[in-house]
Amino acid sequence: MKRSRLQNVLLDVAVTLAAVGGATVGMARAEGPTKPVSPVIMINKAAATTPIDTTLLRGPLSMLSGSGGNITVLTGKQGKLMVDAGIAVSRPRVEAALAAISNAPIKYLINTHYHWDHTDGNPWVRDDGATIIATAGTVKRVSRSIRVDDWDFTFPALPARAIPTEVLTANKTYHFDGQTVEVVLVDPAHTDTDLYVVFKEANVASLGDLFWNGVYPFIDNENGGGIDGMIKADDAVLARLKDDVVLVPGHGPVGNKKQFREFRDMLAGVRDKVSALKKQGKSRDEVVAAKPTAPYDAVYGHFVIDPDFFTRIVYDGLR
Image (tube, rainbow, N blue to C red; front, side, top):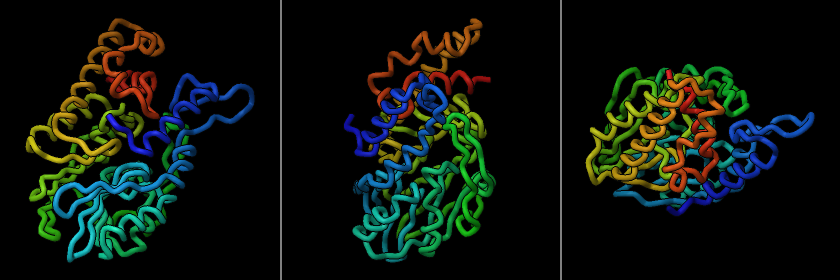
């Protein structure tokens, strides 16, 4: 599978982190008194210069990649509706990519979940005039600083103006520029703040981090996520989608339902192997050493979430 420019940058991040001295990609530890290097810092640095690529989807929909999580853009006479806002340091290049699509203003921004690589751009999008939509869980988490030990980073609260003001506690349907935009909330999965978006007429869906196309995902065990919830949510999404749907993943290239199903099956396959080993009383290090992801590494193991890191995430998330 061809990797995007940002994926190649983040693969370099993973290699660099490992070289710093950490067997754990998510929290590389250097020798001696050197402070641990958080991948968040390196990802932000990469996003500051990575070009933004625009991929046409169907009809009036496009995907922007290169600023953390993928961004979906619906544009027309009413303006623009965005799904996710990327990382703030990408603003000049994201705005240029948006302007190249059309000069229509941004009217709405939907956050698929709270993570910084999807919400860090909220302030400038709000300053451009957009109404920001998200789950109550996202509002709660972006309103305060939050520690994620797996990333060795404490994320600051978003400024007040960037907090979503349209708070969803149930599914909601919008009508925008000829598209029926279905916003669907899910039970805790990747986090406890997730939703996804279906553009009905175009048959395009933006899945946020419920789908990472061709790479192992991060699952936020510390903030409501878990491997079982992720699989359950993906099963529900798969049951809802049409076979010829075009999928915008949270990370990776534009995908299809077959790739999404293969991703879900990978999650279940790794979960089952890790669970069996854990039930045998094996420690996390012993499970990592057993390489339970091996059958899938050739496809999914070339990203900032490497096979060992993903194994640890799955192990820690099993209840």
